[in-house]
Image (cartoon, rainbow, N blue to C red; front, side, top):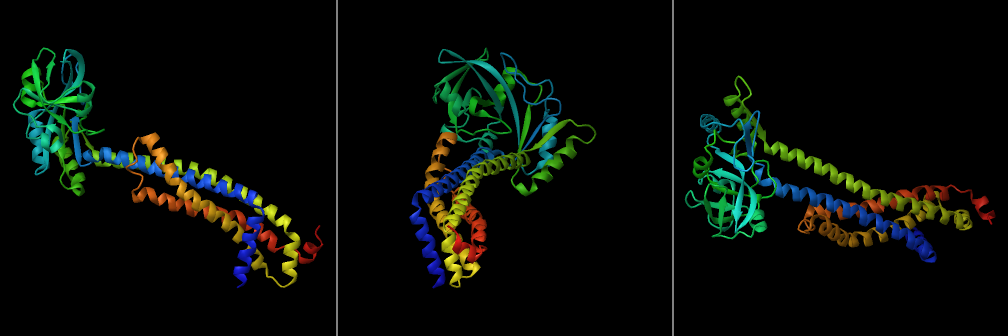
Length: 391
């Protein structure tokens, strides 16, 4: 019964000083909305990067030690050093039964519908393409004179299935398929280029070897063992090739973006701390205004802890109201920042984003209680006789 009485006294004081209480609640609302919105944005950013890179997280990339992917000026060409057929066979033996995909790459001027363009060219064995890429429209390669086009390249140059692309002085290629957009990757980025049959690439440019080799690992738990097997096979005496584990690179990138997410959330928390200082100030004012009331309560037998509880109730009421409203409004805030920063809200309603609403509400209530603790302690320790004499 006493607890209810002190709760009613606290609620009455909030109502009596409604404007002051409203300003305190508004500070909590702004703080909660900020911290939740920043948390949702950071989490959405991590999820977006993860989705963009997850398709290459099961790959091992092998490139020549002193080079890598090379692009010739004006015509497709390989880097000065490359990976030979013999080395590709050694990689296949080392990683079996995982799939080994050798890749030619270069760049060239092209003529598309009478317009000049420059694009990346990847030469792949037609049997390897379905393992690495997906089709959005049309079919995979049909014969050595056909080509598949990346989604972004097709959009920029108005390329459709059936279009023809003239590659330098190497002849025309017929587009048989538009690739599904793949996003950023560590191996190849066909979104802004074309994919041709490796036989056509060899006949057109007579490359000395492959620019890189991609190994698709079936069991991610074995990726370190597969990487070590390649190293033992090719780099026994000297470092001939560089072997990159994309899973490890992916984890590093996601860790970095996770830290960015934590940092942005912490920035949002600053506004909530400011709101906490506002509540502290309001509660101290409340103690000063109610000194005589506290003296009366203490003189009729009210215990110190009960006085403390009364003021903590007041801080709790402010925190609950502000945090609850802020939690609801933070959905709108999260939607807005997701649209502005990422142009998508697909990561807004996933559990890892929504949990930030609970974090924000809990932080708001906790900040309010912490801010109210010192004023409550000060009120409970007032001398009853001096409090009654206070004017």
